[in-house]
Length: 233
Image (cartoon, rainbow, N blue to C red):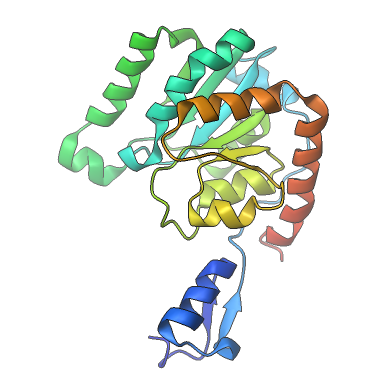
């Protein structure tokens, strides 16, 4: 493919490195264009919470097609510790189950998450939105979030659209260290925690929720860097 292509486009620096060092693609043939994102204004989350019934609450968000590699169960296990520190905390999980998973297993994974939330006694602090939303509604959800969380389990993920969207919209991000997150959130641009570690997720989410100045500074920096990722660029 590389030999037959005039140009090869990648979305991360690590992808460029892989093509050059592992596959021998000439550096001059590779272009890096970041994952595109919608151009949205920088706004305070509280302005957008009322439409989702979470006005006056601290909101964490995860969105995307649900499947076991998303690690949502580890964030659910972190919720009780977060709620102990911030009783008004709520975790929004937005997205339909992955169609391939529905074909093979039905809604088994989603039901297991809902059952886990009941077992942990956090039903009032977790809201599942079992649907696919259009871009306008998605940006409304992102704007309403105080923190974005990607607890994914697979390190070998070279790009994440959900991460790019949330980061570029100015959200402080807490994430596991899959490839795209390691690169995008380096140098304090976000917070990276170990895989499958609810205690670390709880600690870092609490750290951001309890420090308004740090959270705002991280938001502003992410939004500024995200200006190079909007579709117009």
